[in-house]
Length: 305
Ligand SMILES: [Zn+2]
Image (cartoon, rainbow, N blue to C red; front, side, top):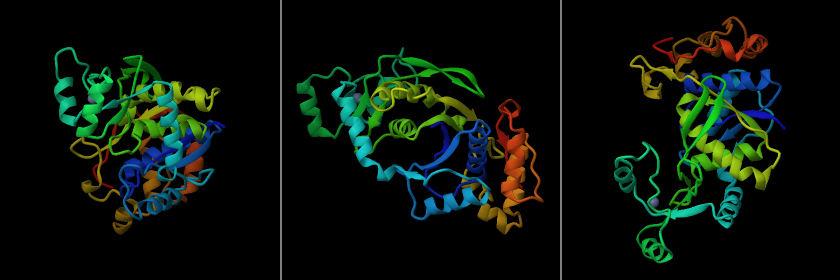
């Protein structure tokens, strides 16, 4: 199966930046005759009721998806099995560093900015025994590359860091990069459309996918990426809920219906939007003319409706 997806974290209501990315992900998938899947990325931050609210809002703006949404907290066994496999292949090692240890080590001269400096890579077994008494270990990937190039439909060729990133956090929770890559692989996803704040994680994820694919789906196609520009507030910072009326519910209180919001979001992406039509009809009209090449390359600054 070939599929695209939208994978929100249920940490609150979706704001118009999230909704815009979801619409674009749907347009990319449907315009290339892919399935479109939803995944609830609730391993880290989940607020009660958010998942239902988010899914209801995605339906309200006219999106359709092809299977029951996948919820990451239901998939502990899947992540554990993959950790076991990666461990058996000698690809993981224990890391006992605190955030502060890493900040100090990675600020040393010649360290790649933002990269784990490999402090725990070559600890001896006796050193590990001592450190295990002090704090629980995270598991890091033993990467054999330091950077990787990915191809993105918006950004072109992007070269970024691949370090020994965390796969299992020291509180036992699968790390974002790992859970995302494994789920994409197992769900048959081959197209990733998301905010461009995640572009720098694409090389790490692409590398991990190449390591996991032989165990899960040797025929897995390469990922197609499109990291779309974010929506910013009037101070040119990433839009957040504290920036005022930015959710469907907020805007409705101000008299703007879902059709108005969808029209505005489509227009912001250089696509036709008609507030006089139902959201799903607007999306179908946008789908007929959708072309990634006409999408704006700059962030959309949202001031007020
Ligand atoms: Zn470490």
